[in-house]
Length: 236
Ligand SMILES: [Cu+2]
Image (cartoon, rainbow, N blue to C red):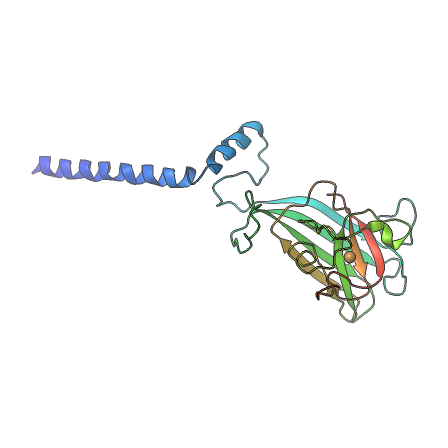
């Protein structure tokens, strides 16, 4: 009797081994990405949460930029510039937090095959003290703020439209650009968020621009939002 029991136990124990092994395989060897993960891990000793974890189960965040500024008229050192002090008064405030998100769990945007690492980016905007109950447009642009409103250049696009200025909705849309339109409350405050499933190319996204109107989306006018009222330098 004792022998039978012992055998049963042993068999049960052995039966677990293949299950465990199978579990490991599933976790590591899903595709060639496993190799990439090992490669990346070798070079990087930093414990900071990152995109390279190949198993897709971690959703780590890393802060890319944090802006907290008061608008002021243009000067050489100004970080947040107003070009229209009625719509964006000097002394009103802007906060912009940009963070990278780990692997996006809801991969609803994999039409363009560039999603290998699939690192998303989250933009979180807050404005305080603008005109009350008013709609504004807002986007991330490619140029730094300058003395002239147009100095901030065109919108940043993940996939660049070969035709510039870009007004084609296939490129000028809120998946391929960063749109942060908002409407202020009765105190002139507003929050706005945008999530994209890509990471900005380093050094190519340099400012947030606040526009006169909400962003249009139609053919031939997509992405336009009226005059540039203000600009905020962002280092990414
Ligand atoms: Cu814009």
